[in-house]
Length: 202
Image (cartoon, rainbow, N blue to C red):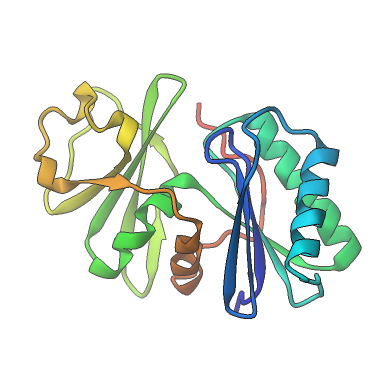
């Protein structure tokens, strides 16, 4: 079970790091410019020092895999793997599709999480059987049909786009950026720990 952890969220939007240790949650916003490995590593080191936190082998690192700035995500993953190599910690990843959907998982309804990148729309949808799973993100094309009895979660900046014109506003939930929702993903076993790499949407 993931207990104490550091979150690295460097996708070019809401760039930040967060720390949960001894049941306390700390958040730090990062400058929204291009990252360098040394800068991010120094920010993390300073953050740990400020909070009197120590990394040990029971600690976990959690990285946002996207979608977003490919270079920013790659740097975040590289820094996380460097910390892993030195401190023998575990690395996990999440993405914005999961983070945005997290507050609605308890409803056990069909959730369609939508993101826009490179002028295209993508979605990932949930399935509930023994536990909750999400599909691999797929592009929304002209043949796509919104499913009945589903919750649609999307960022504020795209909810007025034409793609949602035929959908009742009651079905659309605005995705709010909240790194504390990582704990909901942990509880529902939605963290990826096998192949940590940037989420590439083509």
